[in-house]
Image 1 (cartoon, rainbow, N blue to C red):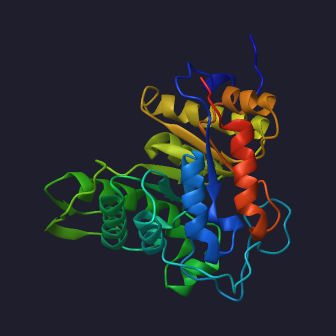
Image 2: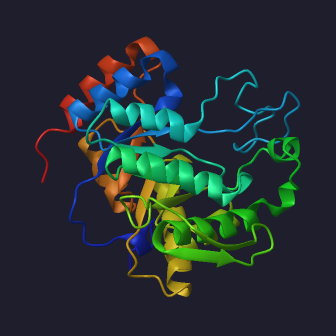
Image 3: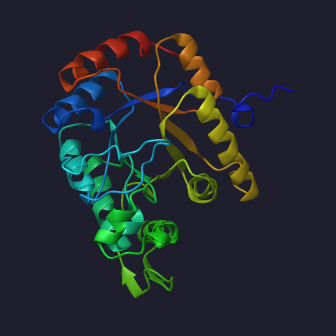
Length: 297
């Protein structure tokens, strides 16, 4: 039996590998044009990184062995749902996602309202990549114990989904209790898909238990395949083996062999950024699409 990474997640594939791009590798002043170009070229989606605030004194890093946080505290940050709603008004078909949004950092009323609005305005194109986050100081800055962030995320996911699909709801959870409320309008999607972000063991368990998908950072087909196999195991333990589920990761693609390797690893969507500088991004997207996104079975 073949036991190479990803063997557990191989399955009959109906659709070819989808390609996406991220706003995180471009200057904000070209985001709208980039989204329009990506849509015209046939990219599946475009993804916006998200933080609420970046403290000057940071601790920790999402990358193993890194001595300093990879995000400068002066990085320009935008409200994710507002920015994506603006992009939605200038596009028609491309999906609009977060990479990733700290869903547990806000009350679910705030997040559910913001993304329901985005989904309504965009005609059902919103996707939420949601994670517990790596930057403890960001949670401390808003007065929340960072050790609770996983539990808060789990609870926020439950509440948002209920707000988006049930006529009225009340909730008795430890972090976001509230008496019965109504929530209208509902989003176009019932509910908006939530892809779980994160590379840690708890994040992969969460993806298997609760996610409509998993969204990972920079990977190779081998590293992605290993994580997807782990997630599929968690899905089986949760009785969700047959649940719809999409795998999205960042990575490189330079040949048809790479495309096949990503598909064998169980990846459904690859976020690519084949450029070094923002001024090269639009041309690089064009060249990538010509090479990999022609007529494909």
